[in-house]
Length: 414
Image 1 (cartoon, rainbow, N blue to C red):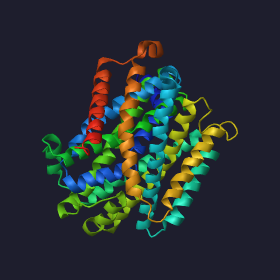
Image 2: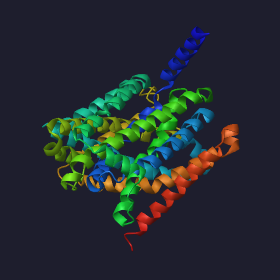
Image 3: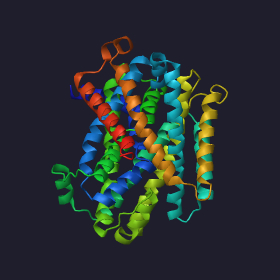
Image 4: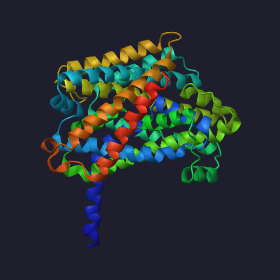
């Protein structure tokens, strides 16, 4: 009996490890240069008081990613494919033009993270950025999905380096607990904008397309659901844990010393040094470098994948160059444009990052709306449509994001 249980456990563990990947990778990439900047600013400005936002962000992230995985496993089609089939080519075209522009801006921000983190180690951006871009291109164009996924999983583990930076800052764990259990919520414009930024950076439009495409490329089916949901949960936990320790690192060092001016993630790494030491600063910069390279790889892949998928072209890392020329051409073009912008002296990187995030925020409700309609369509999903809990969380997230987007667009006019 004991032997049979052990055999079942080992078999299930082997199946889980084989399926592991899409959820953890998608969640980890969410902690990119833009996300690290947002978490750093939150910690520096507000200390521990915004840590509570990571709880609703975690719930929303798990539910949204689970829906993507389930749609991919049931239909065998990517989100872009399903949107085109059900919304028509015209609507799809306008959604994806917006997403393409936003993702070029996002990829540029990732290479800004590469440049900034390498400056901490005394390496010029004119050396670091082209070398990273070439390495990324070789990995994707010459590698396979299996090789790329293993490298991405290793990158995910390295992101836990932020735990070290946070602990070296000697945080006040009592205050942290109080801030999460009894948060001191403010109702002014700056605080609400920061809350929007923290929740918004946790769920990005491109993630929904990448997650579903990764499930399909890995060949997962609905019979693999119970293992895939754990992959999603672990990935979401990893995302929130990294975000938590970035906020804590900046709150316990920068906030308590009145250092609040942070324009990019590199500024947080530099500012840490006088209060937590050179090693903590370098660990923070190392985490930023890993996160930026990771995201600078995944973002162009995701973008090329969903654009090609939406318009019926072959796509995927496992395809050879001659089998998917449009996919690899678009992937290469996004890399070249992003690198070109970064290498322009005095390029307005903060402005690019800001507007790409605004565009992300405006497009996310549209993507979530499409997802909610698709996953509740019995003709598409059969018996695997949403249960009540998923619909409540999904629709509440969608409605809140639509309201926040309208508020952000209208507030400058008021």
